[in-house]
Amino acid sequence: MAVRESVRIDLGKVDRLIEEQEAELEPKHRASIAYREIAERHVAGGVASSWQASPPHAIFIDRGDGSHIWDIDGNEYVDYHLGYGAMVVGHAHPAIVEAIQRQASRGTHFAQPTKHLDVIGENLAERFSLPLWRFCNSGTEATLEAARLMRAKTGRDLLIKIEGTYHGHHDSLMFSVIPDPDLMGPREYPFDEVKTGATLAYGGAVEAFGVVPDIVCLAKAIGGGTPCGAIGATEELFRLVVDGEYDMAGTFNGNPLTMAAMRATLTEVLTKDVYGTLNHLDGYLKERLSAVIERYRLPAYVTGGGAKGSVIYSPTPVREYRDSLAIDERITYLAWLFQQNGGVFKAPWSKQETWTLSVRHTDEDAQRYVDNLEAFAQAVTS
Image (cartoon, rainbow, N blue to C red; front, top):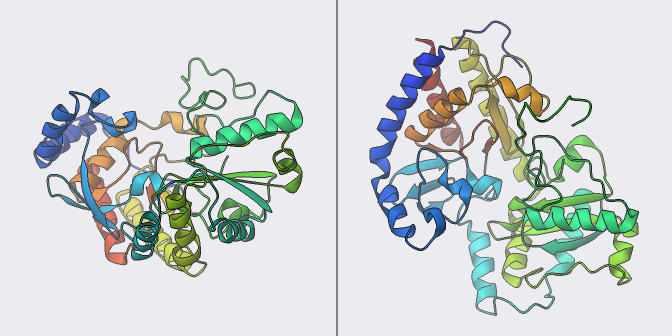
């Protein structure tokens, strides 16, 4: 719930605090900063993905275990980034490790189907109430295939997309991701399950909101950290594929390592009972973070569900992209710096990205997040 009476945050103070927090953070990452210079010799920008180079500098990770990760400088963090939400199972979960090791010893790629398909398909059909499934290697591939299948079925070219939202980096959807307010036109004339599928509830947004669509795109958390994606749809939509009128193909689709990890993730780790743990942690964070916000009268509120949540730095509820334009990114960046310096690893660009919880997070992990928010609140309101 939004705070009705809040303090006005001094942006000049925010700028000064950013300088202080960046100065505190940089010495902690000397090995990361030095290693990037080595990687830059033959890797464009010294990172594998442009988003990994977010300010103030890239942080190179050494290992992860459960809800914690360690960077190459030896710093330890509670991980709320979780690979942009992919690691809801936690890092190095024994069931996932065992499944991958067992399959690796039997072969890592055949470009042929393996005997994981029926179990995974049945599990996803139960979760999302859609009867037929195909598999791919990322959320981008899933939304690309979904867009192509819908166009093949309907004969229409135009797509309706959520404004200010990323749905994969292919031409059909790589627009209006962060639109310029001066160019995006009036509101009257300008959501997939890749991020919510296995994190919001056992059956994702389909279960949480009680709406069964014609087609669903999944990725991230269903693969236990392997490159994964899935498309579920009605028999009518998939009839084109089943009858051979439309090919949905890919060399690595249904890769045995991914399928082994996906099977373990869906049937051994992200079972119905663990969502009680995620809901408990969600409630723990909401209650304690909201108390901090009210105590310091921050212009902010807490939202979320299941494994996903966020502190939204707005005095009024944000319902769509345009509502978020008034949020000053210096405030969200400073909040990120306080978390990072306080031993909580979060996704950069915190105005857009939120936290993710894993089934291996604890109340103690959650309290570290709360303590860091309180330190931030004290600094900006003192």
